[in-house]
Amino acid sequence: MKPSRFNVFIPLSKEGKDEYLLFNTFTDTQVRANATLKAFMGRITQGEVIRPDEQPYLEQLVELGLMRSEKEDEERLLAEWFERVRHDPSELSLTLLTTYACNLRCTYCYQDGLETKAHMELDTCRQVLDWVDRLLSKLKPRSLRLTFYGGEPLLNIKAMFFLARYLFYATRNQGITQEIHLITNGTMLNRGLIEH
Image (cartoon, rainbow, N blue to C red):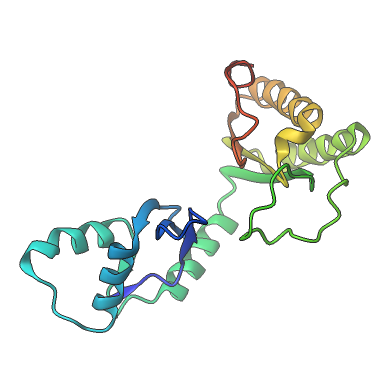
């Protein structure tokens, strides 16, 4: 057995409590982990024989895609997934970056040092919507998956709502289902925003 090459251990605490978010970037599995679990996965990787009472933990890790058999070729699995997605016109997936701005300075963030004042203006939103309209007409997907990303997309809520509202009606009028996803740090979420 081996850990998935797509596993990332993200420290959850600066106080050294050895708590992690174990995130698999391929399966989107997210598990709260501690140093014991991390060491357990390391022991398996080293080829140590696990005790019978540990077997259920290993089975759970395999089921979640966090541990893989030595024979599994994750590069091939990823290539096959990309081919399926690339040639499947039934779903149109779009990720829209509405701002680089963020209200946090997380140590693991790759955006450190980027110009954080840049954000999408409504004129740019209109251009994006024209482009999406052309894609919807050309591809005729059954569903649209829209993901808002940033920085922190909630810092440009005007653009986010403008895009989401237009695409909601555009897809509904064409009989296309829509999913909206939001990649956020969660600090700006509140009940009113969620209900909106």
